[in-house]
Amino acid sequence: MSRSLLPFLAACVLLASCAGGPGPRAEAIVLPDTVTFAAHIAPIVRANCMPCHRPGQAGPFPLIDYDDVRKKAKMVAFMTGHRYMPPWPADTGYSRFLGERVLGARAIALIAKWVEQGALPGDTAALPPPPHYPEGSLLGEPDMVVWLPDTFHIPGDGRDRFMIAKAPYVLPGDTFLRAIEFVPGDRRLVHHMNGAMLNYAPGAKRDVRAGSAYVDADRTASRDAFEQLLLANDDGTYPELTPNMVNYLPGLAPVRYPDGIGGYAMKREGAFLMNTLHYGPSARDTVDRSRFNLWFMPKAPERPLQEVQIGTLGITPVEPPLVIPANEVRTFHSSYTLPKDISVLTINPHMHLLGKTFLAYAVTPARDTVPLIRINDWDFRWQYAYTFRHMLHLPKGAVIHVYGTFDNTRANKSNPFDPPREVRAPLNGHMRTTDEMFQFFVNYVDHRPGDEAISLAPADPAPSPSVRPGAAATSH
Image (cartoon, rainbow, N blue to C red; front, side, top):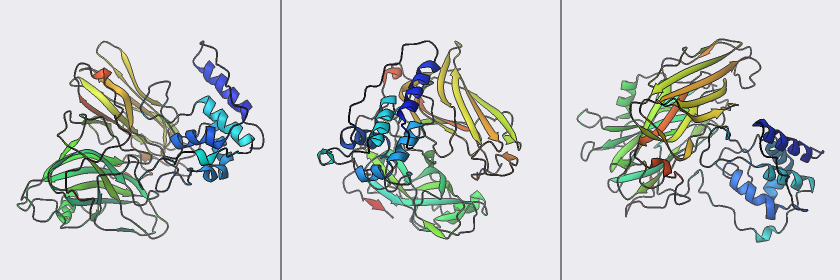
């Protein structure tokens, strides 16, 4: 890192301008004579680094104030100069989304020059305070927190654990849920969580908190697990279930839409059902207690959210079946024909450690191709839910095509096995990190004329508290 990064950056700008073929000449990057943290670097770091590099988030060290960034200055210059950070897997030359954290050439050059000049502080006293984030939240201060009722003890035996769990709650009254966020107690070990919501009718259940909090899914059939969790109504019937309403994966941020789009009706008594909550292997005994952050809204959802799950465990098969022999690179495909016109809001591709590339697009009945997403270098650590800038209309009869390439060779540095061995998607639905998946989730609403002009950017920077009067701040 002792040599200048500027020649490297200039070459990157030139290559970027040439990559798309003939086009306008790249403009020269004009930098100030002196680059300081206060004047030039702090805005870049706060917008693109701090959301993850702060306590309780995925970043392994904080990047909040001048001292934080100065200590890691050379690393920051290296990681941004090679475009390893900030992580944004989607190819912005193929499709565009809200919240893209992609540094431009000028920002990268500013960081490089700042490091070369000795990481000058500038007038840090004049900087406004950094953005405030409540602990563990990517959205802001929640209206209510629902904790899992008990701490889960994870033995240090190196075994994956798949739990079926519940987080019950009692509200002051029926309400409507605008946004929900799952917050792992231990981000190092919580690999993924698939969550649903149970709504109990008035008087249907005496005590929603009764029953176990965690059941081992590998050792208990689902029906038996539900009995241990005491999910049923007192008369033996089951309450209303809202499936797939909250999920967690590494790098996945909760989604929040503008008023009138999405949201859920929420009864006074209920529970969040986690089927499953996956803990990765641990080498030491430890504990976890995760939680849900909730934001409410004052009226019923105008346009309820719907979802299509393509691929593994979804409504369409993977072709050929997802089996990846050792020492091979293979591409798989899945497709789905839309039975009605839809307006797409958010998409979420998912693979595991052998993932190499991901591509999804739609072909309309008029034979037009609609780009959805392309990921040229899959990274298991960063799996986003990508929200379009405006609603995307896909007509009835359009076919969504999804292609995933998997690398099961030694050349794949993320391959969990050495030597490589055959990897497949298990049939029982409980996916270990070392198994594989090929999935594509599409969140949408029924199409209305004019949807294409509707921006999906929330009007306010964070959900505003709107919980009904007297609502509790937490639920244990």
